[in-house]
Length: 103
Image 1 (cartoon, rainbow, N blue to C red):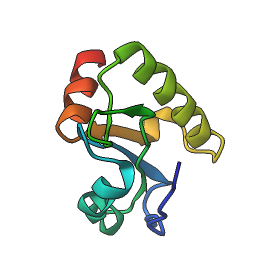
Image 2 (cartoon, rainbow, N blue to C red):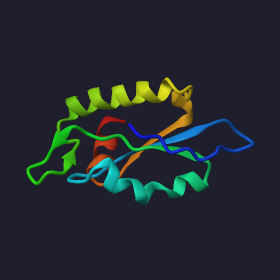
Image 3 (cartoon, helix red, strand yellow):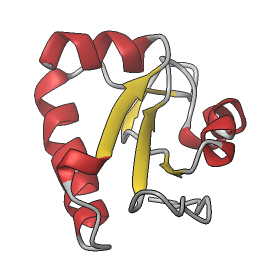
């Protein structure tokens, strides 16, 4: 998973936005739409689903597989020293729907 660093903020420690891509998209396609978080002092980690759609994009449609993949992504974030209390998980389209289904 790719990490984009914001440079942080003087008044608080590191914060991270994990932004889930939408149905038929990829982390790379969705990434530019989330870059505004860097100006707010959040690091950005856009995880990539492994679930391929019929048209070659990616989806989070298999919820159990998505949970397992997201757990791996979260562990890789934690290995950088960022704790869950300092993370926001959000998504666009299918990524947002998946987030609400499992939150």
